[in-house]
Image 1 (cartoon, rainbow, N blue to C red):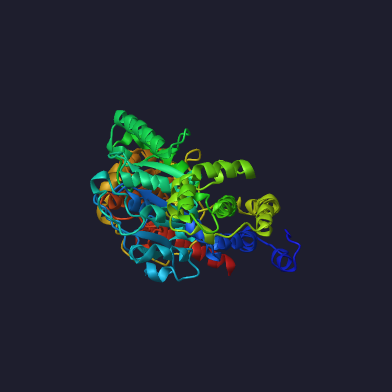
Image 2 (image 1 turned 60 degrees about the vertical axis):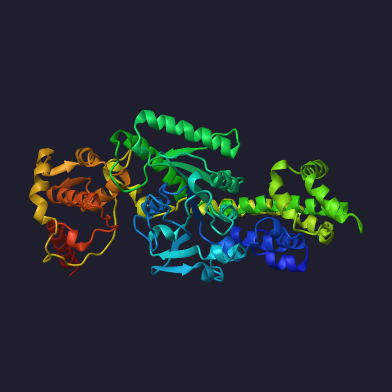
Length: 552
């Protein structure tokens, strides 16, 4: 187990480190936090970290202009509604909503949320009541949320609405979340690619976290193929201007809602894009420790640059006269000061804060009250960056090996990992599931009333030995234009005996679930007893009787 430090207190706290998260918390408290307090780091950058920031589940931040489908995207992931969710063409989401796991559905308002030590939001208090009145936590008993939490955000205002004021610093709040989440999903609408002033400021708030960013071109099925190519090119050009980087951002194309595709020809493309994006989200729990380590190192490098900046400004200030003029000159010359510090201390330019933002925040501070450099604290920081993190790496590798076999995020749309004929490369994968069903032999089957209609379709598809193969059923199901994730769930529910084929009753069940979905209702996560085909109920009962006879 890793062991650091020569001092008695340090040795006691660092001698028995069992997890990467525990090591990061200890190192932060002992080697970073003292520097942050000494040099007022939180006044210029992000507030200090607490245990909840290290212990919380991976978080996904969903950002985008209004009516780009942010809330619908979250509902698509969860495959259920959550309290307070509204969708519409107008800006319906006017709050920051943390969608988290809870045994019982409920909503926690912002002012109560920031005093909960078990939630990683306590440091949002400085943004004030205007923000806290627009912040809430929604707790939902959903399997997806057992592994990750999702942050829904207000829609970014377009150019026509940019005169409206939110009453709080929207980009600053987004920047705080961007620094604390594991993944940022930036949703763009294929119908509107205008880059408003607030959108540009929002992108600026995300800058520095490009490694977490994934761009999604949503609602792509509303345009034809030629238009889609033009929209994609225009989006890439616009994002290149806003992010000011030569690298091309990864853009996922799709239509992330559980309604029929308007252009069926896009199905294959959307399937691949969706699979790639969801796989990226699904592995977030496996990479959580690595992300926390990476973010803490990034923070430590920023702290180091910040300390040298504050120390330089302190040294340049006169003792008595001309302080105001000198302060003004130093703020104006801050870009040159950055360059001198880079050369003098061999610090990378990427470790420095945004110069314009730093100049703005320096205006309200008295440079004479800044603290001079303390070599002992800086030595501890250098040791943290050069030695301590390296000693954590073996423990990190061990944890990664332990979680490598874990499935990652499960539930919701991620249950479609095994989609029967919708699982590429293994069209008839059998999924064994253990579960108990109540005796429903005497309950009417709700599918019966339309079964004659479903039987006609079944026999027109030419079954063999009373069953349809996965390929035949897949081709017919695709004609409904429902998304592959929805069809995969319907297949899984309908193939009751898990033989990779559908008999007459199972096909009728699949047809019924498709009609229910097309009517705008949700597909259940587990097949309710009243939907179990009658023959499967009797077959289960007979097997139980046989088992009882064998045991006796």
